[in-house]
Image (cartoon, rainbow, N blue to C red):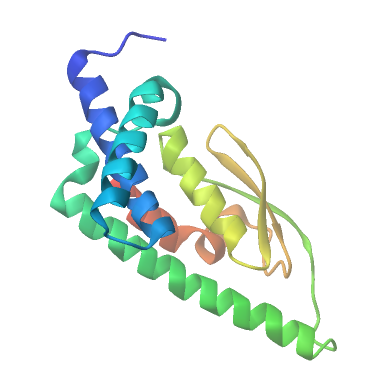
Length: 170
């Protein structure tokens, strides 16, 4: 593994610190001065200690364009989540609806491990699909109702909407 430059370390530190501080505020749900000071110090220490471990991204991730696409991705994910929940709920309420479970595979254009991880988790978090494995650029997905075994059509059904936006972020 190559050594990180000072600028890379600082970028990773800042991105990690902002992310952890947002989590701190979300979990404490307060803007009281003492909470923000303690949270700022603790998250700063954690960010410093974890520069090499947990951070994949530098300051470019905080550009306004990428932040816009991250917010947009959240909307795309939310729509897919609602549709998948309704589909699975319909299958539970009306058990006569056929299911055709199986494993499908498809390839992704995503290059970084982090972006593949985001895609895999997004697929798994939508009911009816589960990412089983990612090998290189090939995803193996368990699907509650396999509509096609053609990799390109399966990709279109399961992951295309996610990947389009992730390519703009990473």
